[in-house]
Length: 369
Ligand code: F6R
Image 1 (tube, helix red, strand yellow):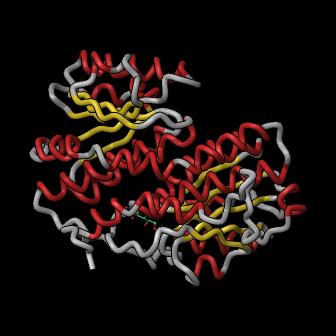
Image 2 (cartoon, rainbow, N blue to C red):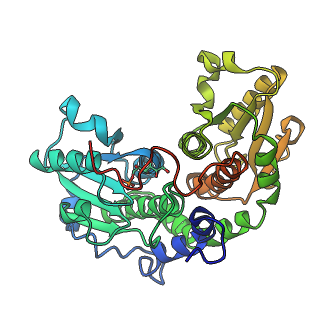
């Protein structure tokens, strides 16, 4: 049932290109526009939305953080992202013009369910992004966009995360399309890029042997830090979460711009620091800032593990280990940048003798608050 792989997690990492392609299937028509008829919220209602709130937990929350960038960019609607477990306890401001997006692989996460119930009680519409047909969260939502990752057995979420990102991009682009923002041309271009993203994920998967080797060489370390900026920041958080849950190592993700506000004090000789570098094209200001961050931490002894786009030569002098990812539009970079971090955590867990599919103290679906 593991299809020749030692662990479900390895199988599920390998299934990502297909999971991504399946999640896009039938949702983009020949002319490059989106057909999300299954989102049964009428376009008229979607045009009236003046605020979007994403609620989710764990890895799904990281997908939500990335969704915020895409949603605000393509729709110009303010978007908040909140941990589902915190949401209803702060008496959030919700009304009929608020669209709440609940992201959940299992569809049974109690914290997320309670958050969406609270939102519906306040009259808000709830759209679920979910991987499990007929589970509680989609049943209690106004609409659902299913991710088609297939069953995810390993406790650590991998392919579900990538498909949650796809679903979030689709929602952002669809809302942009329905509301007719001036980003029309860009929306078409990104839809095209999205259509080829499964191939980019496949390409990354083909280059993971050096990442595995690197992971094994770090098995005796106690701490790994992760830095990222813009959409790379949630990727850093996701890399750290994977390492905590699988390798039982101290791992933390930081926004690279926050380094100088505290975390740089943690840097010491030979401390592994993974840095997700923004594309040098487009938002090149951020790229240059992150390259400076790499220089700063390396000057203080960090062992730098740099994830950077192909052709980005500026990082080369400062990377102790360089992991290349294909060129993608900025907003889609998490689709390829996350994959090496999954492989890294999985291999470190194996090297440390941990149970990869069933990490200690964790359950696949968390049905208690
Ligand atoms: C991490 C992980 C958890 C889940 C979280 C939400 O690898 O699996 O953090 O992402 O418990 O679960 P769902 O998506 O089922 O609501």
